[in-house]
Length: 176
Image (cartoon, rainbow, N blue to C red):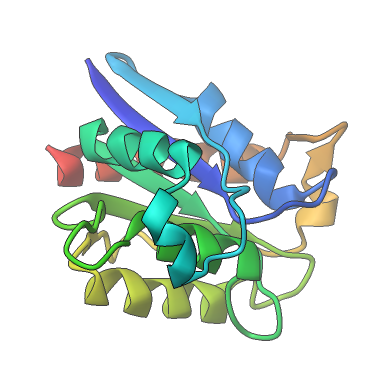
């Protein structure tokens, strides 16, 4: 049995990216469990490393024990969200205790625009590659015009759901 963690980079209540993260969880392949995680940590400050937050230590252990991680990001000002960057900063610290080393990672995102989250995903890939994660390059996963594909907080667009299935199959192979 494989376990993948899924994190939405959005804190917004009715986030399309959280809906996309839930759709990944709901479409877990056989013999795979996907677990939706939480990225809400205090704002990173190196001074806080002295008494490292317990919730961060738990999530770092979860990342290390998982077979892979799926990050679903919105795009804010042509980059990823501050919340997701903060999450990654915490889980890569303190220096020498980086939970991302060798970890298979898949990045996806949804947006109301045409180019979706291409630039946010590029920023995430740069950060994760620096942290020595193994980032799946293909297939890329961008959902544009997400507002037309979600009803009641759930993705209902059949093309998007089929793309999730293909992406999960590719990521499962990559993470093996």
